[in-house]
Length: 412
Ligand code: GLV
Ligand code: MN
Ligand code: MN
Image (cartoon, rainbow, N blue to C red):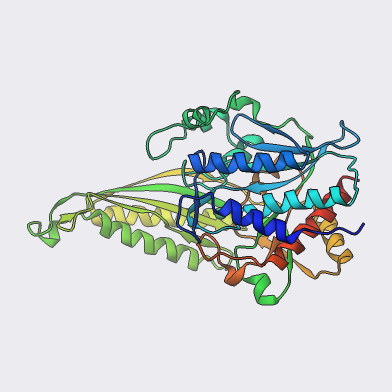
């Protein structure tokens, strides 16, 4: 095989997709089931069909673009990722896995490869938690990690349910039909930017993921007492934002003192009510995101945060309520796929290193029903979830090439 990735076309597609956005360039914002997301999906569907792939969508909008193999009964080899983007994000998160996956398939087609197992490119719905508070809705449903009933209870900030917005988006069928039958995938490989600094720092072009960290997230609601910023004396205050501030520092401290660099914790949302300069904050809503490669350590950090909440609540006479949104377990990547990826790198004389994914990905959930592995490419300064996220065309080509080679070896 003399596989060749069409870098120019891939770059122009990445730019074209980035222009379907609700943010000023270079930022990208593409929230699930907004008109912008639907426009991006329609644009992609055309591209999938132009590549001769048979496209179907399930009831949550996971999109499967299939290159039929010579053995239709053989389990499918999957690849793909997501195209939704958090507010003020970049061009590459998720997109490299979808458009890089498409180009990998086209490169195999150009090369005259005939797959035995069908190869399927997946576009997964709502990997980002922006709209419904929980990430990976598509892959959770696909793998049975989220029940249809729990999915139906999810609401966005305007009180719209998942069912309401998916039906408005023209998706038909029942959420019960989304779960894949057992044994559907022989293997699933996701190409993604690293979203961390290691590959760039070590000047290694490719990372093969062996483990995906375990994320947990929660909404925390703090209720104190409001009042006049001039009239209420300091000893009499039950300021919800002061309590929240202590709690945010306790979150940071819990992660910093876990004993491992693999523990990370973030409060990314802080909504203050009523939000007036001369009014004491009576209510604060925080988001909490804690991750670790070690489940017991992640849970110990969550317990530490819960104890801190209790102490702050007692000391400041405020109520602190924690609503857990998800507490997922880490995933081990499949040694067979890891080996297939390593061989593909070796075949193309590309150096690589094993890695841990500290970010979560759809592969974390697909791993519940299929063997998975991930391939990382470097991104500048490790930046992600920000407008200056960047992966070089050369790195993207290397990722797509190794992905193509691996898909071929898994489906031969
Ligand atoms: C996914 O985008 C994550 O937050 O890890
Ligand atoms: Mn992301
Ligand atoms: Mn991503």
